[in-house]
Length: 521
Image (cartoon, rainbow, N blue to C red):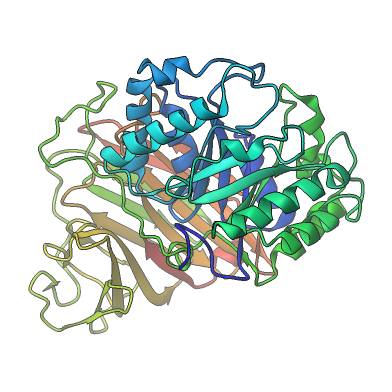
């Protein structure tokens, strides 16, 4: 039986982290790889903004996040505040944010817990704090966390095994891995003991140090061979782009390394053994994702005191020359759309629709419509992206596919719509919502050589400073690889307002003249 969020045998997740300015995008641009997720370091200080920024803005809806908690500073410290209950409020607040996020999280409680410099606590105190935090989160109903114990990875502490919290508390065993000659014997022992306890192995920190990787064979090639021989199921790579406290990590970012190293890494990641962020990733990990949800009887103010914003309509139009007009309507009452060109239909009662229950427990609805005079207007979807009941289609042409995602035994929390009939610009798409105040919706036009994506994110629980956001990006696709992303729009939503934004897509007209596929998710 696999552990929580453990990949199948022969599969490995690669998670990229540390620098959250634009390092994640730079990594994807330089290597051509879309990693399985990201990594960041955190503290129990009551701040959840940083978590929401990384979860929403970096990892997104289809990735895995590894959250690495420092219990004390790099120079040491005491665990008494945790044991005496002085950190309980912070622990609870972060646990509630994790629960609200709902997507798979790998969480390390105590980075390099056996680090010899941590003189302020004993192994018994560490285990007590580890147990307390896990039990507190379980008491809150946090079910989307796999718990990680992280050892330093070298033989600096001969009593490292005394820091193991126990099989009932640990889902994954992890270690840091930087120096092959010094670390390898010890990490082999950690991996051996982890397998003995039937726990998957993670490399929680890694990267070349002090400019030692000037070619593929200097560090990255041997590293992946060692990782394979150790049987690790997850690799966390420190993609430092700015010098942190320890400047030894400064040269681990791929944009600070020779370009052939980054390109070789990208090619290595194409091996079928490496998993990538995709709609299928969670199913591969045996996980189910649940979108952020606010209780039905919750207040109309978010946790930061900001006014709740509900999006009622999103419209996007694209000309053949690349001129776009995006409108977002947050008014309580929106004017009706034009009369449907095709035959109106309601899926609430499911007439003329075929519904199948898939093996993974999700329902799939396929509704076919007759041809109409034009296919340039995708038109409107009235209803909520949550349950099937209440969703109606006002007008369209061709076939609309609706694939909601079932969460546990509860109602549908997320749906993906696609319009597989390819269309050319000029075109427009309009989506109406019955209720939309806690989710992120992506409207995507996929061309053979580019991807135009609009995202709309109303303020949600835990997002205390950034507020509601909307944006538009274009990513060229060259030889089936994503190029450098261009940001055309970054803005904020306002309540009770019809806002319109005009921007130009920086793409050759020949690309925009291609047929495109529309997806909403």
